[in-house]
Length: 64
Image 1 (cartoon, rainbow, N blue to C red):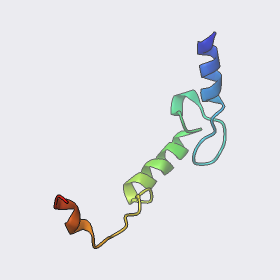
Image 2 (tube, rainbow, N blue to C red):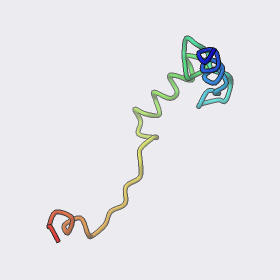
Image 3 (cartoon, rainbow, N blue to C red):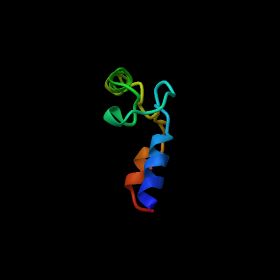
Image 4 (cartoon, rainbow, N blue to C red):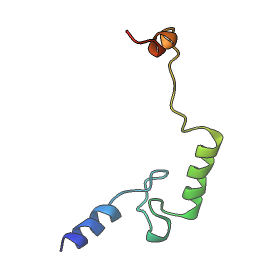
């Protein structure tokens, strides 16, 4: 029975792009369109993690 519970929890997750229920063929997305939108966001750099520039970068290489 734990397997059925796992299936329900996975099916309950909405599409990360539009919020509709996900479809097994395109998980975790609801359609190929949302999958392509997500891929485009990755390739265009929309999902980049912002970096913070610091002056202490040189100090990190030196042991204290």
